[in-house]
Length: 290
Image (cartoon, rainbow, N blue to C red; front, side, top):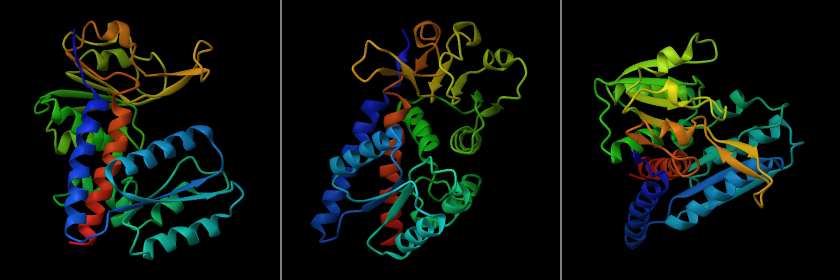
């Protein structure tokens, strides 16, 4: 059986470390870090994610500020709120929960966030710093994947890492991080890649972030590979009270027979993303108040 890369356990350890640091800050007479969250509209999944982030803030002793706007808010009004958070010294970091309504430009809103308060790590300045010697705030999910591998002592140097999915949020930054920090040889696959299996079968470390349940089957993975499943998709399941279950991009039942390490879904990368968001908020706080 493979070793389970238990993101839930590691995230819990990280939260305990952050909580200890917050207690230290308070004992020095300093305030707790404050994370602001902007959510627009009433997308069910977005509210679930935001509730998870609020619960995480509470668990480590962070302050939080929730700003909920109707889906009809204009882009200009939303931008004004972003500007206010940029200039508010009591807010250390903030996120704008995606997706946004179609009439609002995600790129324009994201780029208007001050990089030092961009705890999602989405701005061009933070994104570009991945390949610099002075890394700023790292994108939360890729940061979480790297931290998970590090805490399980998964060797990355000199390994062949294949990443399936080249999105700006996960695959692209993770490819750079695996090259820069992991010192791995990276193959980045995407929807235009031909004969995907010919690449995945050669991976020492296979990371999949597409959002297609069961995309990676047993025959696409080599014996002993490290498999990280970032994909999380809601699949209809009437046997569940919620009416759905979460499914990853990897066929866990069969692939786990061949892998040396593997992440579960849920309980793998998901909790690490929120833990990374908390680490980024703490970093933003300490960088701005050092």
